[in-house]
Image (cartoon, rainbow over all chains, first blue to last red; front, side):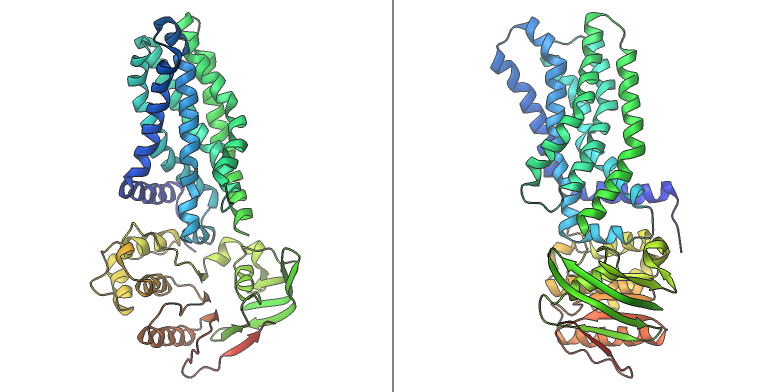
Length: 227
Length: 204
């Protein structure tokens, strides 16, 4: 039996999923546009008062990022499930957890990373300071992968269910609350002039924890879903 | 060698089969027969470890497949109802990724040779979504030529295939059996493999 190295396996799967995403670019763009539209709707809804907008900005951007990541979760496993490739992944003589981790990372690169890159532009729209935008980017970089990983468990559990999209949000959104609190908290801390390091450390800790446990739990959930 | 003892399987409250015993050794061919809904696919999926049997044991070279895990998966290929190929990738990419994940070292020449053997000359680099159903099935079947798995589990391998491809399939199976392989398959079409007496297992 030929066991692939951890890096070898990760790189094969990530490359595969990125190629697939690039050949179906519309999906990637939809998530990004959704994020931009949701964030841009707030000033229209609550009025153009600069002080209020500045105060709301971190929360609005984080909630929009959370919703955008829910929107893209449906695509994580469903396409592979429908054409049977997921079934074959379960039969591959390699670690399923590592395969799942690779899928989550690739998914984050096409659905989470564009949000992080777009966030500074949206921050300017809310008149955030350069320092606050800097912290926002770091917080999103630490937080959005965690959202993808927690979401993967929900996506795996609801695989093949009718109305799975709504169900996965109900399952996953409550679990994402800590990320939201510390993510938005970090940006609010820098605006109010207190230390951001505690918030960022907690976000980092959540990321490490998710990195260790969620691929394994997701792999178990996939085996249950395929039965 | 694959041994099945006292296997029972149910879906929901419905008992599909129980007390199933059979074994398969090198060079043997087993056809699973039965009406629609008699549990043929469930049996094959149980053999792959997707479904947990209610009772009974599946042993590969004397050891339970649940304990063997990856060691068993390295020695088998499962071809289900779904072709397990990505529409956005071409045939070459699909097979190359599949072989890499299976841990086989194959180069493009071998993949192209396998595709040509299955009558897909000139289709190697077309996106799979422009191929016909039968051609997609042929791409999926080309996987059989690339691995060195000894156990083939084929669920309706002849779906969408034309007469020529059915003949080719018979050829591939008989070659595999000569090389001490084992094949378990289901089909509703007649499949005659030269020189081998196909054993039959009827599910009711």
